[in-house]
Image (cartoon, helix red, strand yellow):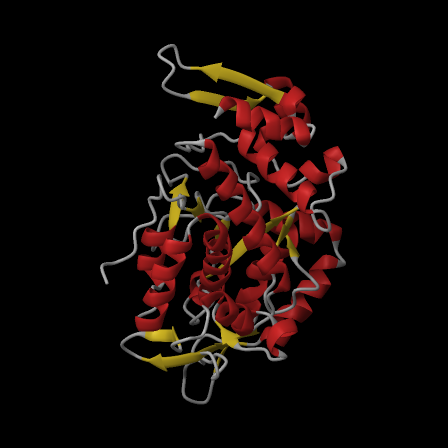
Length: 353
């Protein structure tokens, strides 16, 4: 483990940044960023400015993205545990896959409408969207999420969209490191989709909690996270309880509805804040969201530095607990990332066939 990781760090030019701690009994080895570099590059565990600080290009360079991922993990306030080096390397590649897939993803936002490419997918209420027999899962996921492949925009909720890009990133890694598990994943999606809470439990691990929250500006590229809507009235509009996103790195978060304009943390906070200004009752007395009104308020705020500072300051706080709407902001306490996947150490366990 030690030699393999240090060799990779040397190739990336990161070996001089490392501090290594071995357990006295040799049971484990810990790598972390040297404390003086942590304070200089990521004060307060703020990873949003890491690429700017180090002039890293993690957008057009996959090597730059790998460096950003590793540096953010090495600097973490939590320990990322791996049983061996292949599992660590696979985890980094999956994060890269998720980021790259997220950048290519463009969807039509809808809270209730559901659609997928009919030549690859079928739907029933009992099984959700499943892949047609003989259609490869990776190809099916790309067709559903990437207009450059399908030529179409399909309707998704933000939560389901994050599931698809995580699943795609995992499947792409399994094709190389664990084909047998990919075969099982293929059969799973031909019979029944894994969604929502079960998806979280099967495919991801969560770090941070309401009792031990992660720092507000600590993110690793490939993380899935939630921004909560702290306004009770607008949070009652279906689909506007909050916003699920993927952290792309370089201070940017996914905007699946307009991928050419990913969110900064400030712009995400401001948009969610102004959801309260877009709520209205339709002719049937149901609460709806006027996105054009939200956009108008966002534009006005972006042109007013004092108002921007005030709103971001109010939103850049840890969220309140569930069912509480008090003084909390929109920042969640935790982040999610995929489980181990290698043949001898995988803890990603699919339901029995």
